[in-house]
Image 1: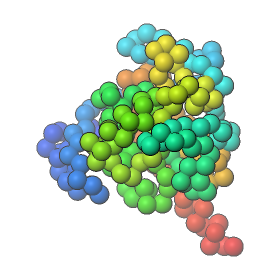
Image 2: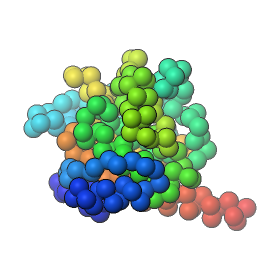
Image 3: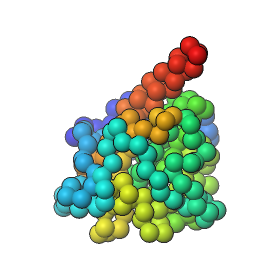
Amino acid sequence: MRFIRRPYALSSLGALVLAGCSAGPSMFLYKNYPVAEGSATAGDGHKVLSKGGPLSLSGNGIKVGDQLRSVKLAQPDNTLVNLTDTAGKGKVRIISVVPSLDTKVCEQQTHYLSEKNKGLDKMIELITVSIDTPFAQRRFADEANIANVTFLSDFRNADFGRTYGLLLKDPHILARAVMVVDADNTVRHLQISPDLGQLPDMDDAFQVARKLVTTSGETLSRK
């Protein structure tokens, strides 16, 4: 386990300065939460830690190289959308998975996705998935002034959690993870935090996404 590098670990003054320089008016204060090294494995038979105790993952585990799996999630207006067919279909997408937006670590993970992506949000789709209700997600986005992230809720039957092997049946939340999917819906990067108290390395995910965008652009320019 290591502690957050670069802009993750900030003094209050430093956080205010960086927030003031960000694309939006957010004044979120980043805390010194640890960043996970390595990844847990999704699916039945695998576990992550929470406050030192093991929690069992449930479902058919996703892995790098797999295709994005079809599953319907609720949008903030409570209508359903298939994860394979979100607004960013055909583009690179980063899918940030959090247990609950009503916790400090999840809050920071989501702000980081929104505010520290260094312009990726203009080229790709940023998605946050949690089991929070669509109404709670919409309230969070409004209060956090986050408009560049697609919020999707798995509150109905935890179908996303089961389909991707990221469901923690007890206490019925999702594991903490970040996934990068290319324009062809192939999972190119996946990190599942081995401990729910640790953030996934969002900077690594950003780097993978940026390389995919660059490669896609070079491929298109040669056609």
